Length: 301
Image (cartoon, rainbow, N blue to C red; front, side):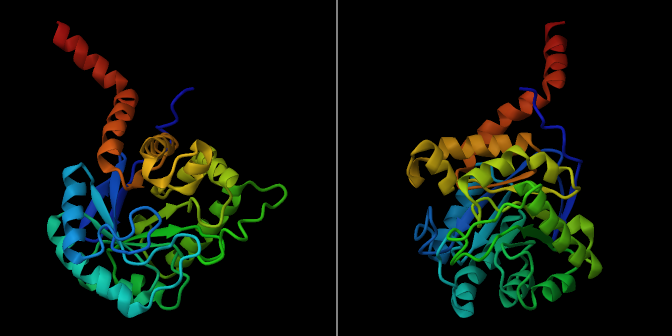
């Protein structure tokens, strides 16, 4: 099969203190400051443990960090504002000193405001800024990066009533329509297009078949003009296909990340950074084979 890795436009994504050249895919390390996340809940629950994990992810090759204080796994209950702030704000205040882009996974306007004021660079919102006050906060911070994610329903019920398929429309068509609508709303608020990125929302109100259909048709979204995130890491769909428990899904997670990158994703949000970084070196060698061949010829001469 011929690689499709060249289908994405070249992006310079504005996010807070950084303008990121996404000519190559970037790896985002996940930092869950939670007791109940589906994969690593409780492992990095204290500020000190979370910061040790941040440093380990960067040492393993992560380009950026994504910090979250509230689990969005299917069926997860909402977290009170005060608890989320207590979990993420101390971590963000220290993580911004590591000189890499820092993302915060939240949908609450008050959390967005607090972490942006503390120096966070990116807001990663599963609700795509549909919650009260969120859009106003992002419009008032003129440089922060934004990730709009597609979610059908809400975490408490999304897998009980997944996305309905519409005759004549693919799942990718529906996700693309939603993300374009949300993007138009942001543009109408004078939010710079160069700040906006997209996530198709693997596992958020979609069946296993729909998740893999989105992966197969991802080029359609990658060509729309916004940097695309891929967040397959350790997801339950990988477990359904392979039969592996969540703590044994490194290989399927890396495979899904590579397939997503080959279909235009520019940011892969992962737990297993070192393995993903090594695998991406092989993908980059393949896509840059002409450069490598020229270098080898020069060395022989």
